[in-house]
Amino acid sequence: MWILLGVIGFVFMFVFDILSMKQKVVLKYLFGIFGLVLLIFSIIQISFTKSDLNVSLSLLIIGYILFALSMSLLIYSVFYEVGFKQTYKKQSEFELVTNGTYRLTRHPGVMWLFIVFLSISLMFQNYYMLVAGGVWTFTNCVYVCMQEKYIFVKVFNGYKEYQNTTPMILPNITSIKKTLQEKNWRKL
Image (cartoon, rainbow, N blue to C red; front, side, top):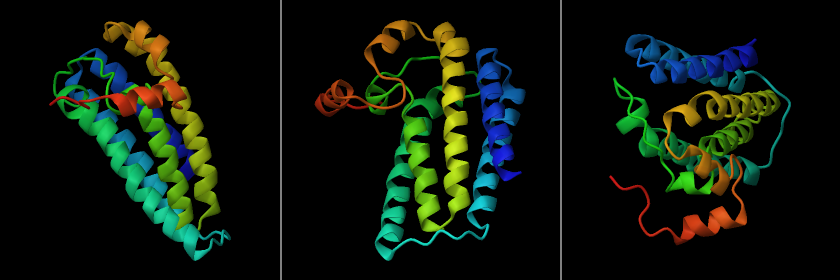
């Protein structure tokens, strides 16, 4: 049941994107917040479900370190680099971000969120979180494919070119090199 609620959370976040595109302010926030709350609530519920996964102390420590790094990168990519100045404003301004973590991949949040799920599984020694994280990562991949097909190509000038020059979800050698060579990350 919790896994399904998390999936529904992603569906609500896609509706948030559609409503942002149509500048439906109140509905956009309702769907966005409710989708995020459903996912977070599901993560919490599954994390505290008793499971038989036993990990060593070193894996437990790695889980905490991965969680701190991936959650920081997730917040940085999704909320700082893109969000506050554009997507999450009352009236969305659609400006394509192609530098910073968005030079690595077009959807760095998918990668960071997967690592968050993995690290929570290690931290709580929870097999169910590992399964849920896999399902939610698949759902997130479907979500970003739909964003690309139905939203981003319509609202971002130059998105087709960006698709041709930057990998979708997983970075490649070229995108890693470009990111490391970038002098100024996100300009404020």
